Amino acid sequence: MANAIILLFDDGEIEIPMSLRSLAEFRAWTATDAFPERGRIDYLAGRIEVDMSPEDLHTHGKLKTEIVIIVGRRVKDRRLGEIYTDRGRVSNAEADLSAEPDVVFVSEASLNLGRVRLIPRAGGGPDRFLELEGSPDLIVEIVSDSSVVKDTQRLPQAYYAAGVAEFWLLDARASDLLFRIHRRGATAYEPADRDPEGYQYSTVLAAWYRLDRSRNEFGRICFDLRERS
Image 1 (spheres, one colour):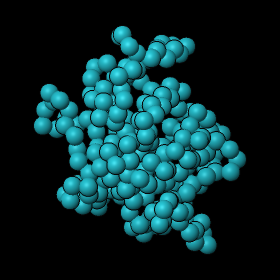
Image 2 (spheres, rainbow, N blue to C red; image 1 turned 90 degrees about the horizontal axis):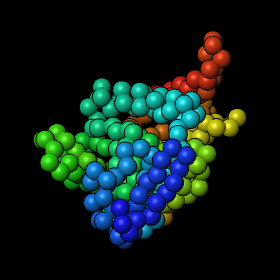
Image 3 (cartoon, rainbow, N blue to C red; image 1 turned 90 degrees about the vertical axis):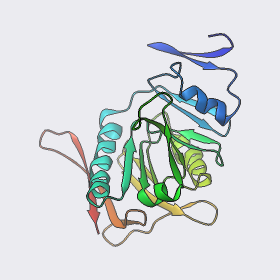
Image 4 (cartoon, helix red, strand yellow; image 1 turned 180 degrees about the vertical axis):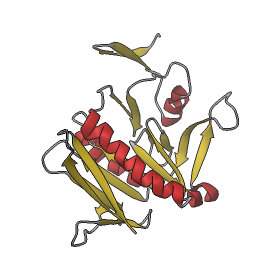
């Protein structure tokens, strides 16, 4: 491709058109066949961030699976809305943002009131959608070695500007397990208080949560997201 920035990796390359000068142009690119099918590529306030690092199987992938199982079960059982993971793209013009969070929850109220729109895939059928546009209710990010500053600084600021009601940040790489629920404050997200048992309240899901880590009988790391209504 002419007029492109070529990013080289051990197992391939990514071509980013130099013509991408706005969020609208970036979103148009994501809808084409030229958009890469691997890696995470986000647009944050004019900055295109590419992360081709593989997810750690346990401290990222296994942890994300636990969040999806527990939160997804609550969302499904109570018909609260929709939960998305793995390349569920969120775009918001006010925040100049287009990102693929680890987990996204959108309530039925947000969909019905138009706070979030499902963007159809061009040429797709009636149930084919490309991305979410607007302000999701809850976004979860799990920190990896290549995303520390992005997950802890740039993305929270962008999600706040996008009107996301609640932001969860998790980091299981070190001996101190991090699980923080953040709510919207006056100018930025603020961490929720913990009760005496270490639970934090999610206003969006109307439940209390605590994340525990242990090892199973085979010595492998395990996570348990405990939920209390």
